[in-house]
Length: 410
Image (cartoon, rainbow, N blue to C red; front, top):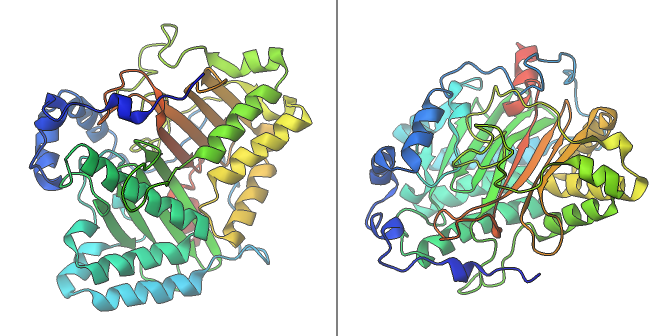
């Protein structure tokens, strides 16, 4: 089966979907989106969720205690805290008093939970990068770079570039550009006390907390529409290729009966889905923005039932899904995830061969990994397609935003 091209789904320039948004920037569209037939209902639904005090994602409504003990990182698993503090200090040195006040929040602030991945700015948290001068933008991104692996930083920047590419492609550069993202700081940069940063906007959200040698980057949202840049200065950029390949190989490696059990719905838009299972914006994924307290039951098959070749491929999917972490915290996270393989479940929706779009979830007491192929938002495909995808990483049972660690610290 040939993979469809996103260019086959481009709207005509005068199509109402894109034409009505011309000349709107992030702030004017934030108001217009409230009346939009697509965005408006989502905003209303999310408004009911955001003010809720943080509890954490669970599988049954009850937080499982003791999963995230308060201790220093093991040797070889340390966070790059010194580099992060140095980068944060450089950023602060460039900011005037109003900017410092605007960008700064307490380490346990509710605003952590204000992140969102759509193009409309529902919450104007921190500083908007597109409104800052290049020195401030570069300094903020230098902090991001100091906190991520080289691979993770390159992916984040490529998603930002794809957003700019999409904005140019549909002639909406005021609404979607390389820097249409919000950036905020939480707590005071320190080599021992908890603090962190947040970057969010269209198809990219990173929430990073560091406390001494420990690091948590979660929730994470990484997505793209389209998944490739085929023209211009960044031509050749393509994202998620390895994860998509590994996921298909994983399904192929399962025995037929086990694979059938892993598939909880045969079609991405399946009549068998119960009411509410298909969200207009999130589509199939469950752990996205404003879902900090959602109950997500285990589905599919236990990972312990997989044959060794399939388990090795699942490990590859896990590794690729958390590759944004720097080497030390990534090693810690992989160890944490592996320690719970006996309690880990894997489920799938849709086809798995050729160019079939699909959804999968890997879920345990310490991690949720989702990937979902979507219909078009600024492209015209009314069926899910491989060139538009969302991925989510959560740390359930209360440690999104590193909250479990901060609460134990007191």
